[in-house]
Image (cartoon, rainbow, N blue to C red):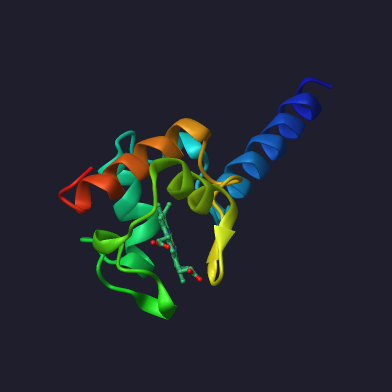
Length: 108
Ligand code: HEC
């Protein structure tokens, strides 16, 4: 009896380990805690490490004229080819990354 309980929990643990390892998107908690780190992890793919890359029509963020609230809205809900990050980042993380984007312009 005791060994059944043991193997059942071993299977459960193995399943939990697998689902964590194969999750296509890391959990919010595994992301860097600062705006620059989140930007490199989540945004640099299309926008480039300095915000200027412009892949798949991504805007050059260093010349964006959007206000802070508008940037938060784009980052949260997406725009055009850019998907929103509301399921991926917490509101606080979105604010951090937007503040980093604004610092890229050299005119926050
Ligand atoms: C899959 C590629 C992709 C990723 C990843 C991506 N973006 Fe974008 N982003 C785009 C595209 C494409 C546009 C242009 C959308 C349009 O105007 O049609 C854009 C536009 C923007 C704009 C609006 C700029 C303007 O002046 O209109 C902001 C702000 C922005 N992105 C911030 C971010 C942030 C912050 C992240 C990371 C959390 C991010 N993006 C990740 C592709 C991406």
